[in-house]
View (cartoon, rainbow, N blue to C red):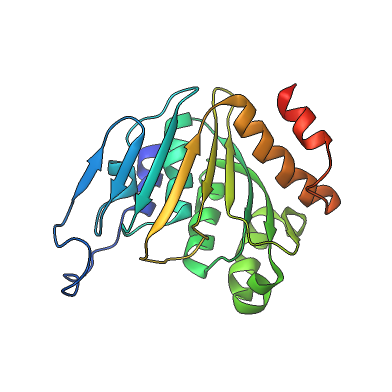
Amino acid sequence: MNLAESLLLFDAPEKKEPDKGSISYSAFDEYRDDSFVIGKRMSKCIDVLGPIKQDECKHVVSMGEWSADNVIAWSISQINEPVDLVFASWSISPEPARRLGALHKNGLIKSIKAVFDLRAVIRKPEAIKTLKAAYGSKSIKIFNNHAKCYVVTGQSLEIAIVTSANLTNNPRVETYCIYTNKEVVSFHKNWILKTFNDGDPFSEDVFEKSKA
């Protein structure tokens, strides 16, 4: 299965017509320029976000039928090579966990280092079990965490996604700030790794390493 075929796993499922009072009734309704994106209900992440290059950023607000794992898949499509994924999230549900596992099976995500809040283990143990089965039991650490930040690393490009969105199917308004600036990406990658490795995201060397 090639990259494009794998990303079809992340297409928005067919939905019934939204109830009256929802933000948009159209099957695909968006506003986009290079930096500011609105994805309305029923829009697909891979269509709405468009391309991104080095030293660019996108500020996104969405009520589309997609979530953080879809944006991770879009990031892989931009990097266009196997990646490593470092992230912190408050929660995960079984379907996004299955899709992340499929991306590993298809060779698109080589490894993950994930920080979850204890509530994720309590509320969705089957999703945590799915991730551990795909990536190994040492790929997940539990910490007192409510942050949602995902860093996708390839050889040619790194993308940091700072967002309100967990790894859950949640058709509510969410925001995403997406960065490819090396210092910004390094800062978020470093504090997540410090949390993962040491249980301490608040050391000064997180900032110093980002500036290096």
